[in-house]
Amino acid sequence: MVIHWTSQAIKSLEDIYHFYLPETGRTKALAIVSELREATKYLLIFPEMGAIEYVEGKPTAYRYLVKNHCKIYYAVQATCIQIAFVWDTRRNPRHLSRYLKQ
Image (cartoon, rainbow, N blue to C red; front, top):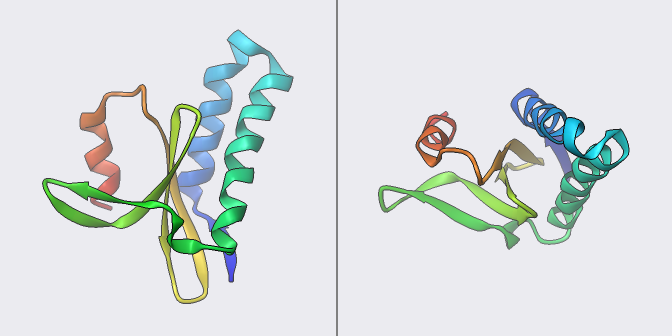
């Protein structure tokens, strides 16, 4: 099994990097993104470790891991673990439903 990052997940990481860059500098912003990527390696050992996300009381296709202020949303496929997107939990939660319904 392998971990596959979708284009949306990569864009999420880029957004997080650019959010932290002005306040923390390049080194710390890269470290934050690296920590998020590193947290997903444990999914190769135990793919079901993340909690199931529920919307309006119904389960979605996504599970998530929490790292710092972020939730890393993923789906377990037959041949890979697909990282769908990374959500900074300090954002408006109403916008999250748009991502969960994809």
